[in-house]
Length: 243
Image 1 (cartoon, rainbow, N blue to C red):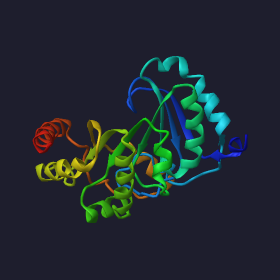
Image 2 (tube, one colour):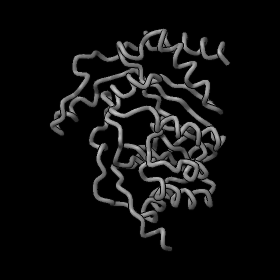
Image 3 (cartoon, rainbow, N blue to C red):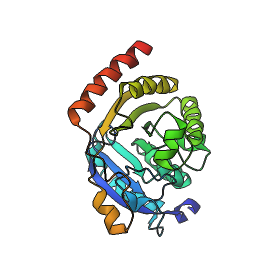
Image 4 (cartoon, rainbow, N blue to C red):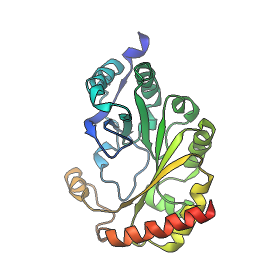
């Protein structure tokens, strides 16, 4: 088949993932990302490397894990940014759909456009919210929030199920005011099934040293988990009131 000649740059594959979607997942981490988030703990995946997997390679690798998926497991495309590999993921997902395998994508919503096409083959979108304000979003990621807005429009049109993830960063997203803004912001996103808060940590700092990159948040402490839980409870109450 012609599409089997396509290749993608994949950093690693986790065959027994438990936190990147429902059930037991095969999680595929693609290389390449347009964003340069200051709290990113996978800077080694920022740039695309040599294409090392064909569609057939990846499909066969996933199929070896299929017995563990059972009723609600499946495959999650992550990264880096999987939307930079949309054509490749579409072709793999076509094969997975024939095997009735659940597909999810963990994304920041910043890819190459044409999001309608890939969303046809995805069952669940895990959307990582960086910030709701464009200026602060740009400070954190190095890009404008406009591309995310395009993705959200396609996401709403697709009517796919959505999980929201938000990293809680000291002095940036750890205030009640931001919780209020977040509740308003995600109100425009349809079919939200789950909202997760991830406390900021510095576990990826050593990777920056190895790569010779200055770690932007070296002055920050890890997010206090008790405060993170308190903010989550406040947010959920606010979110339910607004909806």
